[in-house]
View 1 (cartoon, rainbow, N blue to C red):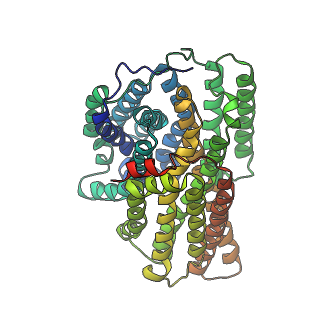
View 2: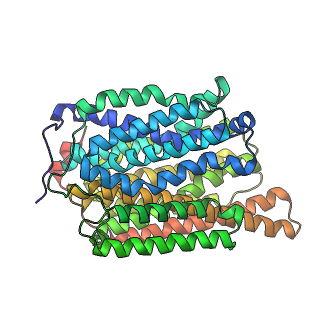
View 3: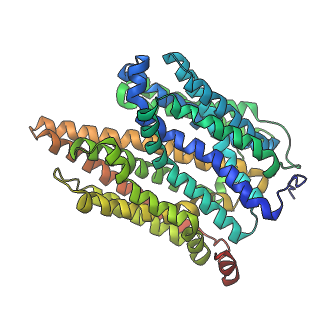
Length: 484
């Protein structure tokens, strides 16, 4: 029987204020994944990056972010979710200050590496803190909806904020803006967030497991993000992937023997956790296809400016936000987990199939907006129940680990999906160009092929979602108590 330290438990009437502080920290992490992309041209010109080295401004963050999600979640389980949330926020805030003050390529890349570490820790324990704060099904569904809203809206806000700050001030301010936010979160968290430490868990860390899985994920991310440049069949890419697989096999062997494993392998026998993580990989792959490839289509084929592309994503993001702030919780309470995920993934698949039309002379209303609306609807319906499914079967002392696993699945799925789909688009474009197809037509053909594969990912995720089981408070009384 596990027990959670409730000495510093948050009073019931302050839980929503605690959630606001928690989401403020998460929002800072989420927007950082997209705010940098808009500023990359300015960073390149100011610090003298080459096209190849510029990618490390993004890749350095991805490496540590992906590599430390599992370890960050486990540290929170063992030594306190609030404590490690604060540590992560502090690391991220100080690294943001270093990024903002960077005057050289090496310093910026190093600071981004540390920033990814802090972001991983915060992301890994955030869901656990929500579980600690909200134990009733109706309130938990509402709180997860708010968290989903932050995740859904952060990306688009980051893109717009990055453009505004870079244009009005300088690229340094996309990082410096994090300082007051991080300071506010650090100031309020000790008073509002529960400690959430599992007193019965052994306060020891599986060092060998932590080293092998972290190294494995980091090498896999490195191989994936550089696969397009080095070549997917190149010796470097295949060697890195081979070493990553070998390290992961060593990790599995260690976990099967060690007394207090970093990742108890029995977790993967939990149907909802294993299914939700597989769905997360497929969904992230298809969502990255939507976000990046549709942006390229609008810019390179339709000739949209960066600001026009940002506003083109607004309808989808508004729908996702609306569902996350209330409708998603009501749907989960009415229909459980399985039906919303299946429906959401099917809508995402239809949206990506619609995007596969990508005509050269497309218009926003006919060729972009319908797909955006469908995908926003699908993501808004599905995100909350996928996260709930991943966390629903685990014990409180393993909630941080489960959070780390699902976030790792999303991150690796997005990185792998982007790499694979971008390669498909590039290969198809090259093939069409070789047959003397016009440049814009060749580009459209490449994007079309990638969108079809992305749609297949989403459709397969819908099929897998049929395995999910268990409602989250699916009864009339709970549904009524969840209503505003």
